[in-house]
Length: 103
Image (cartoon, rainbow, N blue to C red; front, top):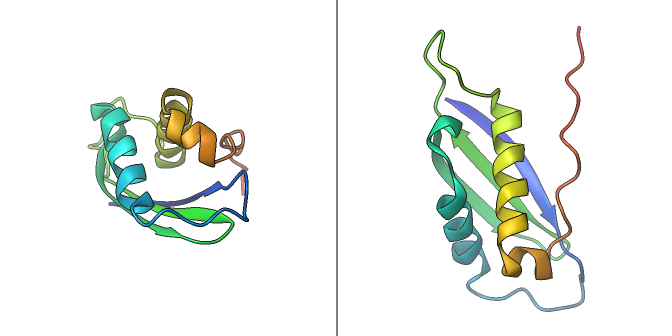
């Protein structure tokens, strides 16, 4: 299993955090998840300035045509943000996907 940490940053940090926000965001992410992303579980925690997410992705089988975990998580967040008026109203758009570096 691969775990990807991500955050959605709030547009306005002075508004109160809705009490059902975590469940609402998790539902939005599940509604937009694609099978090839291998999403197994998502957890979230609301903070004043952001919503922190842990996305648990199944490790792809050798030779399977699946995106790398960070790319899959980023794609899911971008797609969900674009499709959801709730996410667009509360959170800034996800930043561009980080470019992998060679070690």
